[in-house]
Amino acid sequence: MQKKIASLMVTAALSAMVVLPLSAQAASNAELTRRHFAALLAAPQPKLAELTMFFTLMPKGGDLHHHYSGAIYAEQYLEWIDKQNYCVNQASYQIETHSPAGDCVSGSAVMNNNTLLAQLLQRWSDKDFYNHSTQQSPPDRQFFDTFGYFGPISSFNTADGLQRLKQRAIQENLSYIETMFHSAPMVKNPQFDQQAIGGGVNDAMLAAFSAELEQDKSFNDGITSYLDDVNTGGAGIDDAQFTLRYQSFVVRLLSPSQVFSAMLSSFKLASQSPKIVGVNIVGQESVNVSMRDYLLHMQMFKFLKAKYPKVNLALHAGELALGVVPPEGPDLAHQGRHRRRRRPAHRPRHRHRPREQSAGHHEKNA
Image (tube, rainbow, N blue to C red; front, side, top):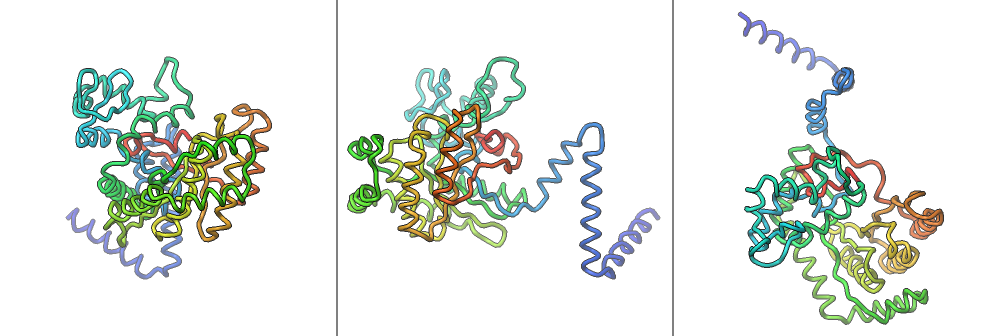
């Protein structure tokens, strides 16, 4: 009898939905969702488990600020370490590119040592960051330092990594990712660096260095290799449920010649592949090299944007606050952003990610 009553109630509810106009159904659904969300917050303590489920199921559209290397599980990197026959130094927690020996152990050995694994995760991610009672790095330092730990393994097994990111995105109802994939090919030129640091760079010098790079076989081979990695690593990713696109990026902490050559290769990559939809610049804004070369980097972007006007920019910015840098720092950044006339990519809009989703859990602490 109870089953029959329940069946009748479901039938009645479905019938009521059928006769409602579409606009009324949408309004009803929005109101029910609003009430449900309010109920999750109404208790003295928010219902965190149910809120997590709510936001996991909620359609999210696209993730436009996504670090490929920071979105892979730390545990996954340990598996890849064994695949490459690398090891983890137990004292420094750094990856070493040779077979396990002595204090440098395999990824599986780390996984099977609960204490070592916990200590590694505290360095490779922000796991337990807010549970510490002892001295630790500040959030921004923790964020930037994580890249140095898993960097040596992050460029391997990209096809596997991208597929894993896709499946996780689908599970979270995320239909689009625009990921900062790999740093762009670059070249070091000491003569250019000397002139640039001395403040003597102009568009003629940038044009001359560009022409030199155009004839550099290893530089152009690097661009070809990057395109091959995008095409092979991302093969079969796009479908009706999910779309993946890429940003090539430049590291602002490097020498001027490395930054400009990486910037040029990034613009060339974006102009040659429809899958590479923009160019980014990454790295802490507030350190000495970043501040010293801030306007120079914007000059480089302006020069290359004129040459490749259809290439999009999505630049890391927004970290130069009073107290972090001298008072002139924010003014310097304002001048640079006015030159490039493009929105910054770092701003307080990043959604929370569980620690397991990100080896670096970068966006939460950025």
